[in-house]
Image 1 (tube, rainbow, N blue to C red):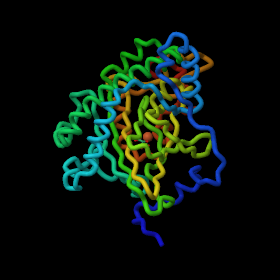
Image 2 (tube, rainbow, N blue to C red; image 1 turned 60 degrees about the horizontal axis):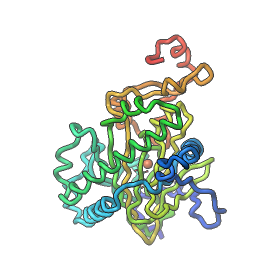
Image 3 (cartoon, rainbow, N blue to C red; image 1 turned 30 degrees about the vertical axis):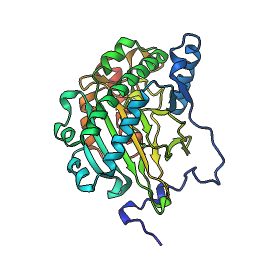
Length: 346
Ligand SMILES: O=C(O)CCC(=O)C(=O)O
Ligand SMILES: [Fe+2]
């Protein structure tokens, strides 16, 4: 008997899950150690590992990331307290129709629902913050949130610096694009589901970001990534964060790094809680393949677009999988325009 409400039924998305024990074990995403990246002796090799991880997997576990454990702990508790609040309290932060920010269930493709509640909020730049939403946050969450954001910002800039180094992009160029960039956070609560095989926790998608730093705060797995056509479950290492390449870095690297589709599977026993921190260029920055990576043999594969416009378009499109990135690709019929030099920036 089916006990899951109809809008949540998505059995077609679960068919190939490798959580199925009949599927042979598969290799998992690489692990990158920040201590090794900063130590002179190990830096070279670890940078190579990072490059391989971004190119072949688009996902990696990050250990010794340096985020203060007390900040991680207090944020976890504050978020757990938030989820435990009565619904009417949480609904003070409710997402309004046609707005991206706020708390609530998310309606996906064809009016279907994902098995999880999400709270999405833009955190940077400060002048774009939704003051109403911030003021509705319970004070413990609001206070801890600020320290968490600062730690994530520090880590993100460090990571982008390493990525710039391996891609041979000038650090200054990256700093100019990302300093005071657009950043946002999605906190997701996945309750246990009596029939997890009939639902999906998060519809397959790629992140529209440059990078995403994912924190699985209560140690329950469920993330799966698509590699070579198969869904691979990610077992988070203790205290690790999981980082993934988003569409913007795929565009900037001219497709050298891939933004990988991922989804979330839920389970019948345990709830799962995550915080995703999204790192993007500033609104005024122009996104496009980084000029120093381009050559006659490596012509631009993606369009150039100002971040502000990229974000606005993103929120008005109905998205599935990597559909937004597809829109950014230069099609063969556009090539003449680019070669004619009418396309900005080359
Ligand atoms: O909760 C997770 O594991 C993934 C969340 C995610 O993919 C997202 O927020 O974009
Ligand atoms: Fe995601």
